[in-house]
Image 1: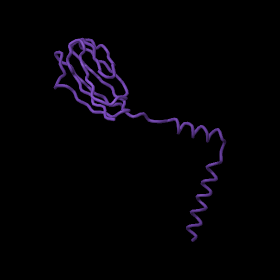
Image 2: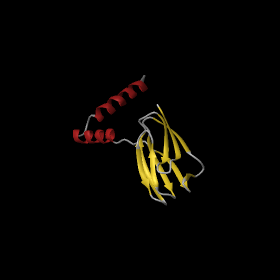
Image 3: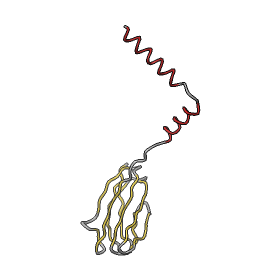
Length: 128
């Protein structure tokens, strides 16, 4: 019984003390705690193009709707990297690397292509 009373007293004291202090300090702490969020790390899909083709074959990746994705393409040939369905593209110079970030909002299966060559280098599946 004495232990129960001691625990209740501790809870009451802790609750009372939590309300003490200047309202500015309490608000600032609450605000910073509620606005500080850690964004999910993006899913990085790396594709290496050698001699105008994907090294090791077409890169296949599955993600979920809402995922942040970054296509990273390193190529020994200049071309336009095109993500079909999302209609996102970026030119990569020969010997260069591009980053193509996007949020997976459309479910389905989408081709990543060296546009001018008409060569598929990636296959992205977005699950709902």
